Amino acid sequence: MATYSRNKGTTLSRDHFDLPLAVERDAGTPLSVQLGGQLRAAMNDGRLKAGEQLPSSRALASALGVSRTVVTEAYEQLYAEGWIEGRHGSGTYVADIAPPSAQFLRAAGPVSEDRSRAAGSAIDLRPGVPWVDGLDTPAWRRAWRLAATVTPAGRPDPRGLPGLRAALVDYLRRSRGVACPVDRVLVTRGATNGLDLLGAVVLRPGDRVGVEEPGYTKARSILAMRGAEVVPCPVDESGLVVDALPDGLRIVYTTPSHQYPLGGRLPVPRRQALLAWARRNGALIAEDDYDSEFRYDVAPLPALYGLDPEVTVYLGTTSKTLAPDVGVGWLVARPDLVEAITDLRERVNDRTAAVPQEAVRILLERGDLDRHVRRMRAEYARRRAAVVDALGHLPLLGDSAGLHIVVTLPRDAAAWVVERAAEHGVLLATLEQRFGGPPVVHGLEIGYGSATLAQVRSGCSLVRALVREARSGPAYAAAG
Image 1: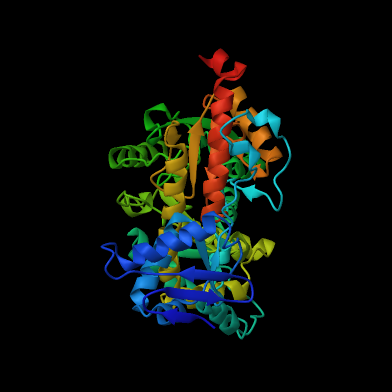
Image 2: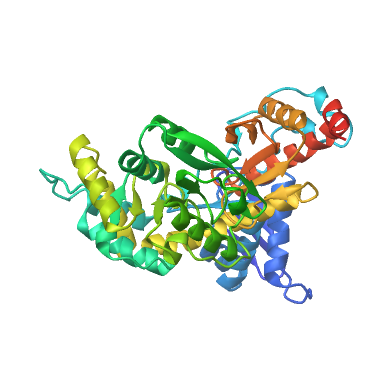
């Protein structure tokens, strides 16, 4: 047990460490700052090791004879800096703050002196995956427990469970300003499933469809498999370039809230111009609102569907807010399209599983999904800040929203960094795969959704050092 002396401090005696701590009320420094500094020093010099559990805030406050707020503030600061991490229902633990390769980040010597993979599992900084460990909450477990009691339907409604559709109407109005009646909402297995269903009822072999270039590879593949001719549509720092859209497109697939992968946010004048273009050309806009919930230092812009629901089909998913494996999304469209898709689903027996639908309904109706999104927004904001802090001297794109940032680099340099990072246990992706034609922008996609804050800091430190070395190589010389 911990022993406390008001003048000398306290020694926390546990099975795995003995840590002396002392706070001085007359030191002129806030008690929480003193405590945080001592814990930080202990983690930095190895007295507290990765994975070790810290005392609860109540226990430590009692041992030190201070208010619980002092300990809570110290823990919150260390958490924000990535030194510690919380595990739901378990407590607070020292984070793994070791870099992927200790020799790699030493002051002297280039990367080539140490080509060994880091010990332990790889740090995955590839885009597209949220922080699924954040779902281990009582609300999450309760929702699935209650959903498991749902009685399976003999003839499931291809539009989805009525309760979930009604809950989605309220959620979309509240979160995205999308006002729609329930008969315009159809539950899907995700945004790509919704796009595939739309293509099946709208497209005929040889129809031309526009996809952002660079853009979402799966969208390009889905539309091509429906027999369409995929036409690359250029983007810039603000998103889709409407003036460059050709005539004769049946569908234009776009990600206006956070262009994937470059991160532009389509401004309102362009949104209005895009909708006017669609009306002139008799085209449909497939709006994929894939991670609009996560914005940092920017205000939300109105969804295209809210500006013109007659020419826009709104696609959403829980794959970024919850997890890809949940398998629940939604499509919002005018009634004739919803009816056509409903008929198709009935004919081909395409359906969304009832239990995940019911779980999402419960999360929505109880406000748990909103609370989860707010919590994850704060969590991702810390990780995004860590990326910007580590890589801010490099040209960055898309850092105002979403779960990834693009670092622009010369082509050969980007490929070299990815290869070398993998040798040191850090997984990255390049922009090249996001192009249907020859790439015109090169660089890295840094995803910060699936890694811990400490891993993000560590992985980005590695990337920074690799880019520094690449700058002295032939790839940068050729680009210059």
